[in-house]
Image (tube, rainbow over all chains, first blue to last red):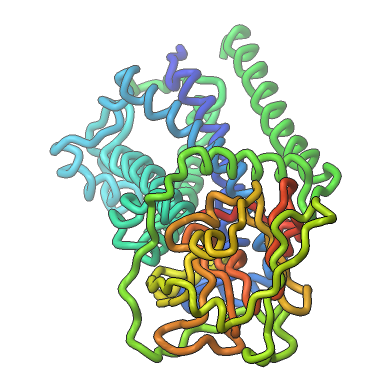
Length: 210
Length: 242
């Protein structure tokens, strides 16, 4: 039995710092959204009541515009590292990954016996992680477009105006939340060795692999 | 698993747990700080810092233009603090104080007729409420900068405004008040202002949230220190810039 290094320290730090930050951003975002919940029926009343969300707009904004800076700075550190370290080569999907995407999903669902060949990340992981990065960038840019629609009017117009930017900001949050849920399910399914690698950095090589 | 790996794993999880606990503890410590105007101090300080940062990059040339809605379109009415009583535009007078620190300074009283004699400015903007909604609205009135010139007001760092009954009040930085689209407005969507929208005279300020667009003005005063602000006192950002 031997071990190999899997995740770089920078990646692990940025990832785990992002966890509380994104939780607080989503939570404070819901406090803000309640004040003008224009997408009908998205959050039912019992949800608002259960988490005591009503009438906390001021608190939500105070939190959002404090934690937001942390989210932006942490995200920028990640993006710089992503490109400088060459990590992007392992994450950004290639045409081959598109071909393997469906077989990988079928394998995950137990509908296909053999897993398609992969490097560090499989085809669906690459697509999902790349999507999450894109959503993180879009949620940030659309956030600034709503935050300063006069000062950053050019950015707001990129998103089709103020209401357009609000919609993109909301949609990206929903998609990121969906990503997080699937991500957690997959991590639980992958087991302890995989999870430990994200904390301690190393992975025990299993017999028959590598 | 070798001892060295076990050790590495243990240390990593210890640091991981410590870090997460520090985050949670830090969050609750921040929240437990004494309140400054309805908000824990660190949050208030970051709000003020954010205001300063964005003000640094503010340019008077940045406008908030929108297509004017069709004449007579009923605008949304939102918020009735300070509007308990209707005011007769014929007898209404606005009190203007050039320097709130000068006990010698006599207030000037201005009627609606006098306001309407000043140069008229028309503008249409996307009005944005801090709650999240927005609506294109057209306004007509006198530019605040033209009003200051006409009444020979020198200005101070801050402008304070209150409703006729004094129950709603805001304070705004002078730079935003001097913006080209900042009006003392008496018309909305092509019709005389209605009570719910702030008759007889209201403030329209394009680079601030709706909360600063005070209705039914009773008093305007200039000050070197920041006058009280209704929403900033109950936890909202004072700068409220867009």
